[in-house]
Image (cartoon, rainbow, N blue to C red; front, side, top):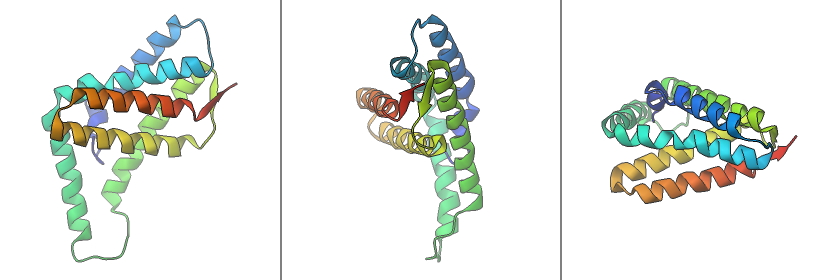
Amino acid sequence: MSASGEIIQVGVRPAMTEAIEKTASALDFTGNRALRILLHAGVSTLWPILKSTPDRQIRAYEQTLSMLRRRWENEAVCVPDPAAAAGFRGLDAEVTAFLELCAQRSATQWLEPVDAIAAYLVAVIQGMVLRWLADCDDEISLVVMDDLVSYLSTKAVDL
């Protein structure tokens, strides 16, 4: 996952959407319980994709870091890098769509601005992927994703 949206380009959004729609059609209840199940279905589609493309993930991190390194060379003033910031906005938009779909299909409503929740989700997943690239500990990554789903489900209420 990178500021350039690498993870989205390998097909996560269609896979997430399909998983959410399939899961939603099988549920006979709505509300926060359904939201949690739908979030888990969507987030779970990430793992096989991430795990099968470590080289792409590393290249994406390298591209982002290279951009930021050039941006920060001899610079002490905090000004966003246009390309990196645009990449993150793109990721945030994709994740926002995922979160809105989950809320819609579960008949729930987010308690906080969904774009802020999306930015949090992107940050956590990026940290998890970076750690997995370093230690290859699948179990920790899966625990992080489960905990992320649990936390996200506290940010919504039933309609």
